[in-house]
Image (cartoon, rainbow, N blue to C red):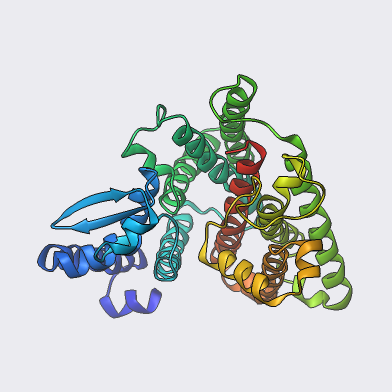
Amino acid sequence: MSRLADALGTTPVRAYLLSVGGGVVALVLGCLLFPRTVYDGFVWHYFWGPVQADANNAYCAVREGGETAYLDSAAACQSAAEPVAYPGYTLVSEVGYVVVLLVALAGLVLLLRELDLGGDVDFFYALVPFFVFGGALRVLEDADNALGDSLFPYPWDTLFISPIIYFTVFALALVAIVAAVGLARRGVVADHDRALLWVGVGLNVLTVGYLFALALGGVGPVTFHPQVLVASLALTAVTTAGTWYVTKRYVPWIHQGTGTAGVVVLAAHALDGAANVVGLNWMSALVYGGGFVPQPPGVNGNLVPKHPVNEGIVNIAQSTFPQVVLATLGDAWPFLLVKLVAAVAVLAIFEREMFEESPRYSVLLLVAVTAVGMGPGTRDMLRATFGI
C-alpha cells in the first residue's frame, strides 16, 4: 500500500480509499451496464442469491427477468434455468470472501495505525468474545427463523446470515473499538482492551441468554441439550491440548511467533471440527437415544454440513473408509483432523520477525484466522445444543 501511495503521491489512507473506491465503482458500473451478466450471473448468483434463499427458508432462489423467485423443492430447482442460488457457500463465493477479507484487513491496519491501536496480542485477546458472539448471533437468527421471523423479519434477517453476518459483527466490533478507545482517552475506563473485552462478553450474555430463555420457556422448537455442549467442549479441549503438546514437543518452532495466542487459534479450529463431529454424527446418540453409535449426517436427528469443504470431506470419508471405521467413528472426524492440521500450518507462518516488522497486520491476521474457525464452530455447537 505504501508503494502505491508513493506512486500516486498521496498518503496510504487516500491510496487505499482510491483503490477500494475504484473497485466498487467498477463493479457498480458493470451491474448497471451489464445487469444479466455481472449482477445476475455473478453478484447475485454467487453472493446475494444464496443469502436471499437462506433468509426466505427456500430450497433455492432463481433470477429471471430482473426478479427473484423462491422454490421449495429439489426437483423445481434442478429444472429451473440458471442462475440458481442455493443457501450456503460455493467455491466461488468463498474465494470472493477471502479477497474481501484481505482488503478489509488492509483498511483496518490503516485505521488502527491512525488510532495507535492493535500492536500487541492483548488487542487480539480482547476480540475473542466477538468471535463467539458472531456464531451465537447466527444461531439467534436460526431460532428466529424457526419461530417465523418475528424478531428479524426479511430483509433484516439477511444481516445475520453468513457471510453478511461477518460484516455485521465487524461493524459492531469497530464501533466498540472506537468507543473503548474514546472512553480510555477521556479517563472513563483505565484500559481500552479490557473495556472492549467486557463489551464482547456482554453481547454474548444477551444473545446466549435469549436462547436460554427461549429454550427454558418452551418456545417453539428451541430446546436445550447440555450433553451436546459438554461433548463439544470436551472434544475441543482434548484435541487442542493434544495438538499443542505434540507440536510443542516435536516442532516447537511453530509457536515461536504466536506463543500462547496459538492456543486460541488451535482451540478455535478444534471447536469448528469438534462441533461438526458431534453435530453430524453424534446428535442421534446424545439426544435421541439411538445408542452410542455414530450415524451419518441427516439421520436420526443429526445435522447436515453447511459448507462445501466439510460436506466434501464427509462425502470422501463415506466413499473411502471401511464400513467398520464409519460404524465406529463416523464420517465427520476427518474434518476435525483437517482443521487441526490447517491451524498448525497457519501458526507456522507467523514467525517472530513478522510480528516485529508488521505487528498490527500480524495481529489482525490472527484475528481473521481465529474468527473463521470460532465463528462457525460456535454456531454449529449452539445449533446442536439448542436443537435448532
